[in-house]
Image (tube, rainbow, N blue to C red; front, side, top):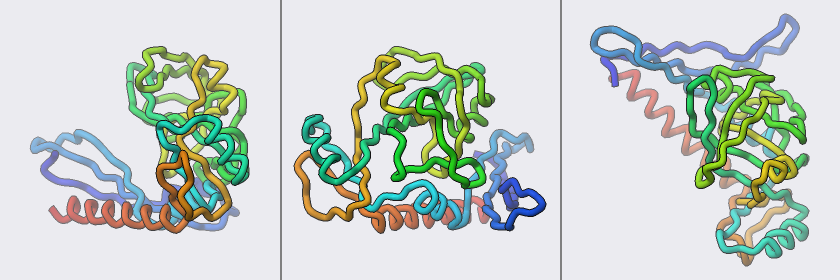
Length: 239
């Protein structure tokens, strides 16, 4: 990809004078060609702060139930009611703005204490239930901010939606937009949940559910991902 890599390490929290210092570090990897021209930059987080952010500040459920493709809505609704859970739709989308197109995700769910979005300082914030919220990283890549227009569509559907960005939030894992079920249906899309999250600890097989991830499973998966990422960073720096 390039002849050499420069790695910078710096705290990327926005701190005010009286804030408690709790740094979150990232490596900025700059890729150069053989002529010395920078051909790209990638920012990679390298510490456990992101794990606490994802599984302490945002996600407050014990089990994540992945819904089978052929499950009926009656099954899904009954499971959700029995477990006092929250239905979540997560699908791949394409977003366009400023002649830039990015593949991202759409998260659709109603307001709940099981998932609490945050700003870039990892502080809880409420997203508008009748609006479109975009992650900070996606906004940065598209060169947009709150109040700007974006176009997007769900993969498999050729219908593009024009939306005004009503809020900017931050997420350490999933980039894209978040909207409520009512807002999605208002736009002409069907709400098709892909998972149910609940505070209940579930281990037994459930009809209509393809797999169950408990809290420790999710954290272990995160740890494995970070180990792989750190190994990749080390290889890039050394070679």
